[in-house]
Amino acid sequence: MRRSWILSIVGLAAVIAGGVTWRHVSSSAATEPATAAANMPAPIPATLGAAERKNVPVFLDGLGTVQAYSTVTVNTRVDGALDKVSFVEGQDVKAGDVLAQIDPRPFKASLDLAVATKAKDEAQLANARLDLKRFKDSSLLATTQQQIDTQQALVSQLAATVEGDQANIEAAQVQLDYTTIRAPISGRTGIRLVDQGNIVHAASTSGLVVITQLQPISVIFTLPQDELQSVIREMSASKAPLVAVAQGRDDRRTLDTGTLSLVDNQIDPTSGSARLKATFPNSEHTLWPGQFVNVRLQLKTLDNVVTVPSTAVQRGPDGMFVYTVKPDTSIAIQPVSVAQMSQGISVIDNGVAAGTPIVVAGQFRLKPGSRVQGAPGAPVAGGK
Image (cartoon, rainbow, N blue to C red; front, side):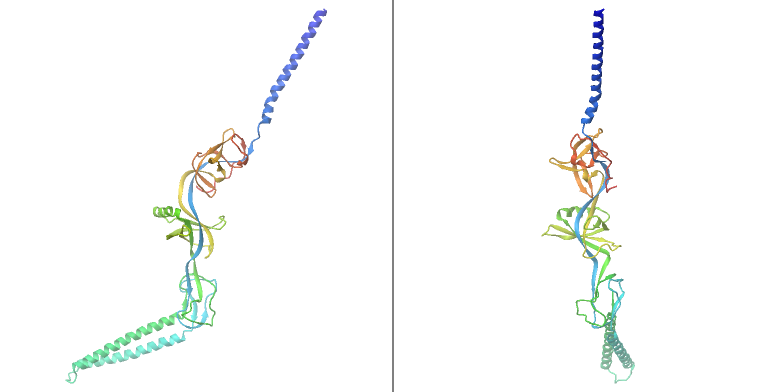
């Protein structure tokens, strides 16, 4: 009995020891995944996006200066007293509008004198023609051919005198018309240079006022000489004028959209740049003569190309690359070839395909194999 009792105790101890061992093994097996998950690095926050196919315009950027489409200094063409000024400084005027009036009385008197002189000479001409007719119709032997020829010469002389009188009348009329000063072009008047009551002279170079045409308006801008052939080629190939966009100095505001008018016929040898001229409608008067603007000339449009936000493109020792996102949210470095960067858009020649998930922003903490977690990025700007 004693031996049986001892064996029972030994068996019970073995069962208890086996249960404790199984529980320890089970507990260890259950905690190993949790420990591994706890040791795995947390996903890194980042802004995600995807490569897209778009139509992307190609621009050339230059610095430009706004110039009035036309500028005219209004001068007097006759001497006299300035009786009246009919415009207001800064007023918009149309071609033919009366701007000022010079005292017309001396010029009116000259016109009247020319008219009277013509009337007198016409009367003499009429009488000479009658005499010539009498000489030709007379049957008297006393009327010689010499008298007829002399009278014919007198008639011709008086006829020429009348024609000269008519020219004097027209000249006097022109001088009288010059006393009324009219706007030669449509535009906006500047500061008045001469006040009413002053004596003005045709020889003066200061003028009465300067009129500038603001609608349309021109912008002269420069491009590097290396871009000149591309512009000329596109101007020849395109059926429509190339589009030019005038922007503020901060490139944040589009002031107006116009067209390229011409390329200058020579390159500046000191700067190696070419001058170009664009014309803008300026319907809102956002452009003003003398203003500095940035001009973006749309050269052409790249159709259906792969694009990514420019913030997604990184530069490394081996060139440019983007971070692509794998299905398990880990990332990899993908080298890319960038054809163009403009307005926040990068055109990719090769390296990624349309639809490839990429990291748009937040790359500073990333490295190959890192897992990312983030919201989709903003849509790629520009293009259609």
